[in-house]
Image (cartoon, rainbow, N blue to C red):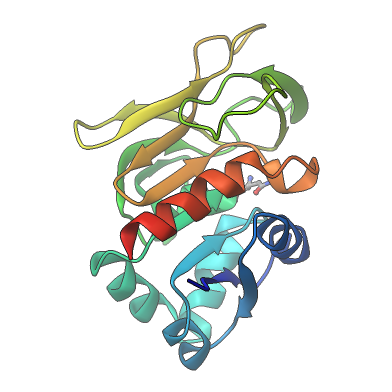
Length: 203
Ligand code: GLN
């Protein structure tokens, strides 16, 4: 069964997600218009700037179509800005910022603080495909964290060490996955393989 997974290509690190999805064994295509959205079995919302992607979603008349597909059960994976876009609630949003929603979480934008805008750490992500590589090397770039998780959502990973220890950074709800970090920049395709498995399972 040949799966096609789209990467929302309005802003952000689209190429990196296309490469990670290709490595995870699916056809990966950029999505900029509704006709392209119609052809995908699942959608990745990349890292970038959530306020910009939100504005562009509306400018490209994709906001409602993507939301409708999410409500109809389309699997989705959001990293960083993509996590914000898939969250039901956002703290420290800019005026007028909207989200597509879909995951019953409250995220805080730029939560790790100005001093430690960007950092890297190893963490365990529940539900990853089995292999011998051990913890995931997680890269955080002006990342959000998850401040509240509703009953429908499941925590998959928390920061293990340092000042932010215990903070929730990966969540799954049904066929929607979100991470605060950017697995697409590390060459480790296990998170994308987890998502591809979710897309496969939803068909
Ligand atoms: N701080 C960005 C936002 O609010 C997210 C950063 C990222 O995706 N690397 O959208």
